[in-house]
Amino acid sequence: MEKGFIIRKATGEEMLALWGVREIKKASPTAKFFYDNISTGNTVFWTLDHDGELLGELYVFLNLEDKDFADGRNTAYLCAFRVKKEYRGQGYGSRLIATALEDLKQIGFCRATIGVGSEEPQNVRLYRRLGFITKIKDCHYDPCGMDENMRPRYEETVWWLLQKEL
Ligand SMILES: CC(C)(COP(=O)(O)OP(=O)(O)OC[C@H]1O[C@@H](n2cnc3c(N)ncnc32)[C@H](O)[C@@H]1OP(=O)(O)O)[C@@H](O)C(=O)NCCC(=O)NCCS
Image 1 (tube, rainbow, N blue to C red):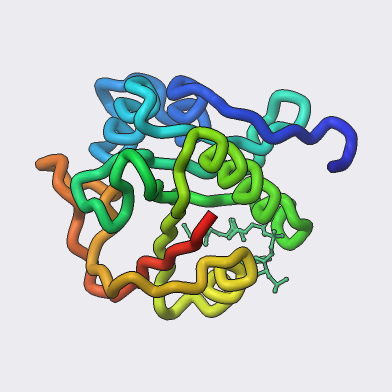
Image 2: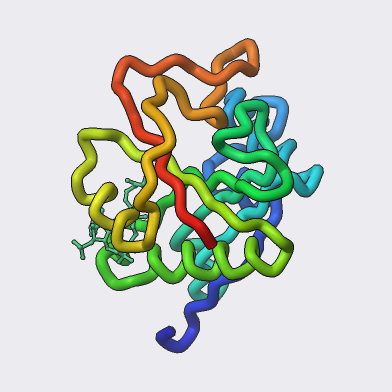
């Protein structure tokens, strides 16, 4: 990787800063959910850091209510995957995922899942290339995208839950 760029685990406070949340009290339900899960260790926040500036993010949920996504033992769920616009298409996203998957394997997980909109051909192609080739099911929600009652928000559009063996 180019000089000055590193991939590392980051904290809940760094996630809040990246998402523009100044106080946890004022965070959206989804931001609260991510922050709480990072704090308890159920979620690993991976970032692409360039000299202290966070340019990419990926969150790995180890356990979720819907065990098709993450079951705390074998299967973990990857989500909120983003690289800043100016840095896309240079392999950083693929490296973030590869690092997170290697870490998951080290702690004994053997499967990873990821969600993708059926109308996002670029992302579908990327995930297939990264080995997420098994489609588990159609979904109408992201288990980490919360409504005001802290329940996963229903979405009109269908998206697919894809899985990769590690
Ligand atoms: C998806 C994303 C994180 C990938 O990161 P990245 O650093 O660009 O990924 P890489 O450089 O390793 O791989 C590039 C691949 O990403 C895909 N991609 C998706 N959107 C892209 C974009 N705007 N620019 C470039 N590549 C994009 C392409 O399939 C590309 O593959 P190709 O070379 O076959 O065209 C990044 O494009 C992004 O932040 N997109 C917007 C947010 C998003 O859609 N996130 C995923 C769902 S939560």
